[in-house]
Image (cartoon, rainbow, N blue to C red):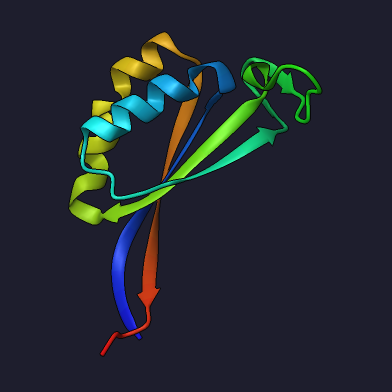
Length: 103
C-alpha cells in the first residue's frame, strides 16, 4: 500500500448552492469529490431536515474531497467569499490516503 498524509475537506452547504460550489471547485485544483445529499443536523440556523420529498435544494449537502496538505488552507481561504454569500461551513481534517501499489 502507498500511504500519503492528506487533508480531508468537508463542505456543508444548502443544496441550492451546490451548483455554484461545483463550478468554483472546477476552477481550482480539486482532483475529485464525493457529494452526500439530504443531510440532517442542527446548526446556527436551527435544525435542518433531510429527505425532503420535492425540494432537494432546501436540504443540506456535504461535498467531501481529499487534497495535499499544502493546498488545503489555500482552498479553504479561497472559498471564504463563497461562504460569506452562502450559508455553510468547511471542516479540514488530517487524514491518510491509502492506495494499492500498481505494477
